Image (tube, rainbow, N blue to C red):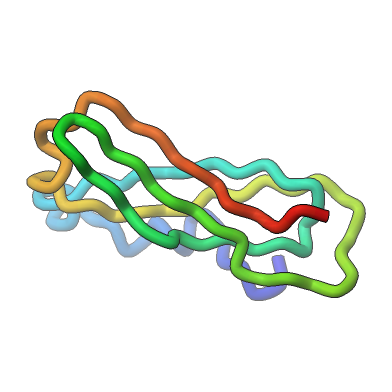
Length: 96
């Protein structure tokens, strides 16, 4: 879809060697328009809590009136989240 690669294209690079050191987190986003794009703004890992911070990356003047859903892939070192028992994702977006 436009400049957005397919899920298959994005995940094709992740092989067995990758998963030895990393976990692949997926954040699912539902939005009111297919015109909006999103990206990872940060990753927080404190004690047993792990959170992916997602933000809207564009601010189109006009946008379509279609619902859209996106997966954002986030590779994370297994050692970074080894003690985490709680997971969350926070979305920051524009208010229209």
